[in-house]
Amino acid sequence: MLNIIICDDDPFTLRLSASLLNKAISRSRADACLSCIASSGGELINFINNSPGSYLYFLDYDFGKEELNGVDLVKRIYRRDADAKIVFVTSHTEKGMEILKSGIRAFGFIEKTPEQDKMISEYVKYLNMAAVPVVPDASVPMIRLPLGIDEAAELPISEIVYVDSVKAVAHSICYHTFDGSEITVRDTIEHALELLGPGFIRCHRSVLVNKRHVLSVKNGLVRLANGESAVCAMGKRKEVVAACFKKERNSNP
Image 1 (spheres, rainbow, N blue to C red):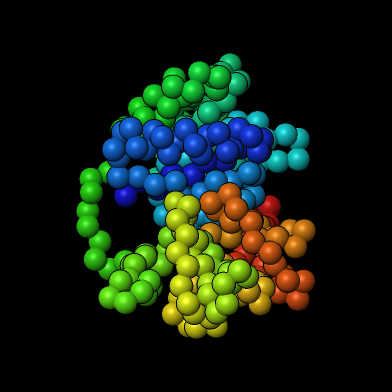
Image 2 (image 1 turned 60 degrees about the horizontal axis):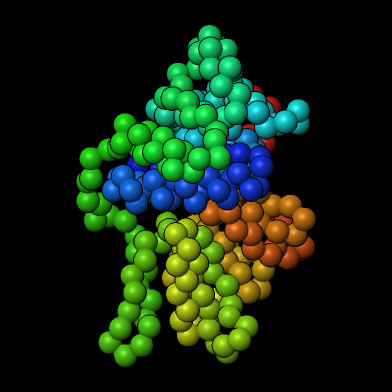
């Protein structure tokens, strides 16, 4: 499967890019999925440290004065993902030559435009260029969730972003997946943590989060790779940070 990361510091552009990319994936019929929606270079680096692998990246070039800019961010990406495919999505098309002169192996460039269909077509082009052959993987850990009598759903554990208690329904919890699916079952948070294993951590008495999907912890919230946030109890913040981020991940390059 082709795993994709997008990163842009503008919230509106980030949401729009995620929507257009999902449409491009459907249109291209590529075996691909959006694995991370990051709003800063730091969140992106935290994600690939938590979930090492090879990705197709769609990156903004300019993240402002307090953030890593395109070339520096890509250099840090290459330290962790040597096979990274980098596509810059930017309004600064004049930066293309500067990027190439820096030695960065750009996979391509997309110019930001209000023409959404044109943007989708550009995304489709790079999805097709980066597509990998479909190889079935029977080793993916799954969880089986009972929905009723003789009815159950199976989910890859890696696709579950977080689990929370359902306030409106007693003794029920909801599994939230990266693609936006929600599955509610009669169970407890404690039992869910047993089933899901050490890849999950309790950030609140009523919330579990998948460590590999945690991008940052700030202002009482855990920001997750699918663009959502979950509440984090004050007494749990240090534990969550320690479990999800090694000290070296926050150090300077």
